[in-house]
Length: 232
Image (cartoon, rainbow, N blue to C red; front, side, top):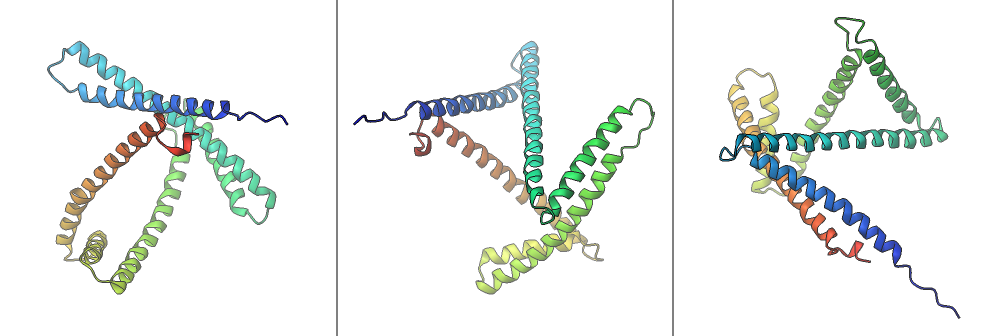
């Protein structure tokens, strides 16, 4: 009987594609970091610093263009998935509403851009509409977040009282009361601003640094074939 040979070309081509993409991503990211770090060094000549700054800005613009293309692809994927959901209409009424709003906003924005030169002070109806919807949605999410924080703090203290749970509830109460327009709560507003400026800002920066280091480590492991998922 003839034995079939194992197909080794497809995993190898897949590994080469992944390695090429990771090499491009890692090299461009490291280049941007190095260029932005070298630009403020005053010991370098002015021409070199200017060239480094222009090259860094060019790479950042390329990243912005790539992100815009990714957003466009995401919109096309959204339209495709919502159009598929319309086959089960009227069970998926929200898919129809999503498509109508998406097409309406894009069409309104294109119409405003085409008529921008005919009016000296054009009214940005699309931006007003987007801000109105965004403020409404953010207000609703903020209200849901308020009740979620209060309920989670109650459940946390009820299940097990610890120092960290008490700090969590205390910080949540200070921040929530600090945003309220209550008379005599000015000192809580000052404490809230300090908490948002020092601990929260430092924690967010630490998380971003950790995410960046994690991406670099995972990308390097995939590139050298250290992950079992892409080894075969």
